[in-house]
Amino acid sequence: MNKRILIVLSVIFMTISCDDLIEPAIENNRGLEDMYAEAGYAQGILLNAYTRLPGNGWSFSDVATDDAVSNDVSNNFRKVATGQWAANFNPLDQWTNSKAAIQYLNIFLAEADKVKWAVDDNVSLLFRQRLKGEAYGMRALYMYYLLQAHAGVSETNELLGVPIVLDPEGANSNFNIPRNTFQQCMTQIYSDLAKAKELLPLDFEMANALPPGYTNLNDYNRVFGDYARQRMSGRIVMFIKSQVALLAASPAFNGGNTTNWGVAADYAGQLLALNGGVAGLDANGLTWYRNTAEIEALGSGINPKEVVWRTDIANSNNLEADNFPPTLYGRGRVNPTQNLVDAFPAANGYPITNASSNYNPSAPYANRDPRLKHFILVNQDVAGVSSTVITTASIGTTNDGLNKAATSTRTGYYMKKLLRQDVNLNPQSTTTQRHYRPRMRYTELYLNYAEAANEAWGPLSGGNNGFSAYDVIKAIRKRAGFVQDNYLESIKADKDAMRVLIRNERRLELCFEGFRFWDLRRWKSNLGESAQGMNIQGTTTVPTYTKIPSVEDRVFADYMNYGPIPYSETLKFKALIQNKGW
Image 1: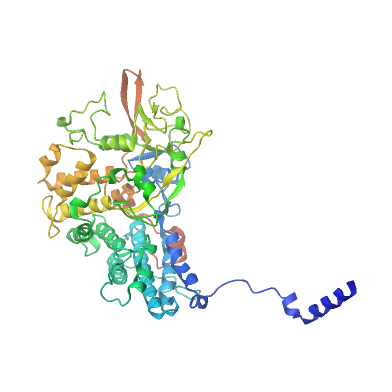
Image 2: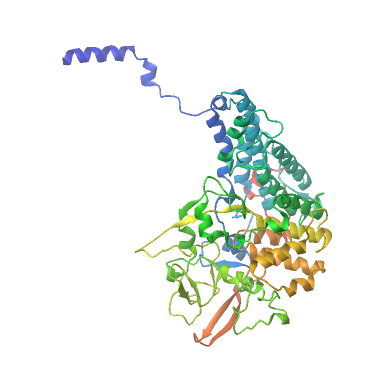
């Protein structure tokens, strides 16, 4: 028997090619031609751009502004704020990530017409249309990220954007190309958005009737139906257009392009009209992150009324572990500043610096804007599953107090917004809860409109949109809890005062969501305001409040309104001009 086995094995060995036995197999490196007959592989190239979206996770760039500090000495935004920001150290960089995404998108757009997207020719054509629409929209979005982070003024005071690259780059490509002007980049973004809007439905939902221009309802729903929710849609494209236009119309960029405030207001207004105008503001949108029943009901890509685009939903407790105070087993990483606390008006709507606010420095958290305690954990407020009283005062006996430990607050405050208080971090009974991150919220869009409309036409005119900056701000503040808003009424005809109010409302409504740093820069506002805190001493029953004038000094120069081109790129490519000052 053994002899027979040996003979059989010998025959098999002799019939196998020596090359197969000795030469290594070709590595499983797939080429572009593999995508033509394999739609899943082809779509993976497009999906690579989705995985690179910076909005997939929280960054807390607020730590680099007057809104927050961090107790984490290794926090990169803390390093930016304290003087370490440089062309070769840029935590706000979007160059590598966005250019890589654009490369994948360019490959996809160059090859998509060759792909057999489905067996049925009509369905294949519809898939090609939709996916190319997504790619154009994504390319415009990444160009926006590049402009936001890297557009700037040259030494000759020319407003420059980034190099426009519309074709896939290969080993023989010329990478040493100059930056296009900011206006040229805006023109390209608008072009891509127009193509995307033409190819995409407003939303991915199952249609009951066939839209104009299509021939088969089943085919339409197969391609444009609800299974594609949370992919780039026509509504998201319109939102991007508003964001891009607001950036271009802002003081830091409006001298180098043709987009003005009226254009920016109209782009935001067109999408807001589809949302019902001012009446469409979500009554529960202020607390979207802790609307428990609403979050639990989300599924199959459905959005709450407040949200246009979001990440997937997952159970976690990472945000709470990073930001709960020590008593709740957290690390207290993001500490709101006194600057931000002072930005919340009094309960009657007046800024606390106004005598009509009746602000009492001896009871600084009483009779304030309700949003203050929604968003910020102040001394003697409660938090966590057991509504634990948190003492941030220096007189406290726990590590929650000011500078008590490495995980304690540096400002006298902890972040409350974004966190689910029903998360339990106790090691004996740890729990998680559902979280998601909105990439785009309607509140941002309403504030975009208010800012642009006020600049274009003043507080009380809405152009052709049917609602004004005043109307929007009134609705937002009413949702916040202001019943009799005498302050708003007193300034409603004053464009300059309304500008200050709109910017402050944006600061409050969008705090800790990664807007403040970019807003200050596009407004050419002061980046160098020192981060302040509050030292509470005395006794629990009779506390005394002393402001800390500088928890952390900010070190920014005027040229930092524009971010740098990466130093390594300017070394490699001489045609790439650096922004002034860097």
